[in-house]
Length: 245
Image 1: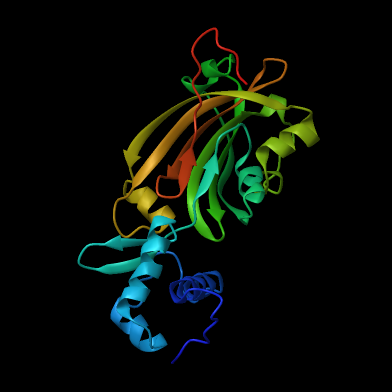
Image 2: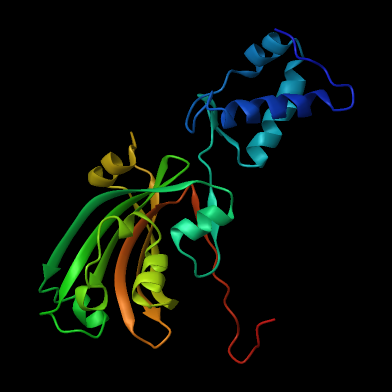
């Protein structure tokens, strides 16, 4: 098979575009191994050096990754968060397709550790919402939120299948203005490997925090696990007394 050559574009660039098109069309999926340099060279009747240049650039751009002794594989899509936006809003802004699988929707009470974080008594009742969040069909986050029922009466599974921030704002008049969170690295356990579809343990980013409304009300607590190979969170730290520009 030979490539339809466009003399206006370098050959390696044309190979890059072919591979990117095959990824976008679903011929190759995240984690799939692509053909070797030798096979691609023979397939398109070009030199291995040209193929190597195309693959090197795709690796540098994060579209592909290499594993020593195994080959070159398709990277999972990444998303980047640097401000206070919901998962849904963040992905839509970056041109990705978000979706949600609801793993649990129940009511619980007597949360002696979580209730005080929201300035509530342990006797308060909460919705427990566990959701698997997907990016272009790929599981990337496992979120468990505890929401006081008194703040969101008659919340439904349909509500939480979309942006929780949006539901809180539009249905209940609660606009999240800030979060108080801690982040740490961890490794997926057997349960998470099953939920995410991992065949081996992978690094995750654990995020635990409380979301706070504009009037200072602590509206919900959430514990989330994000795939570290896909999710990037930027934090800007400023010296005390310096003004942000």
